Image (cartoon, rainbow, N blue to C red; front, side, top):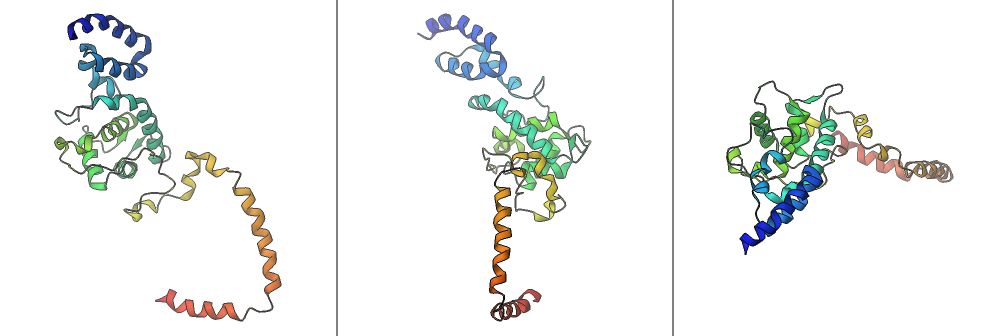
Length: 235
């Protein structure tokens, strides 16, 4: 039965792959693969999955990307690009170790994992990660790479589907995030900066300001509360 299917489907699968190209063909290819294993699908994947012409040379020996992750590839590459540009220094086109760790924290990696991955990847030892390198790091993490025993880390990162975390940095190491000025955020999510909600909020605040003037005659109670609170703040 398998043999008969093989002859029947083989030519068809080839046409599907040609017609849709690499990215679109991945979803169909995995569906075809479930009905009959074709050599074109099972031997090609790994270099097809990674960004660039070949597999990254820093990949741990024996690491295989599970087949069902191939459908996410184009989405992940897009997410990786936006995450990369959220964490590059102004005017730079690379991430240093600190920026890389901060970006990887968005994927749930703790700093030791990110540092380990950084040194694994930085094969030319120039201390920076380019966009192309970062995309493969992102693909590696999202496809479960940090849980693979060959990396030396066994902690499975908590990978979330929403990756855009620049507005609220992870609370793990506050010291790292303080130097980043708040003006950093709007460029990456311009919609939030110009939400129509921000204008109505201004109007009530002016009305609220006028009301306290009516209650001015009895200010004796609030100051007492403030006097009691002050000693606490100085402790």
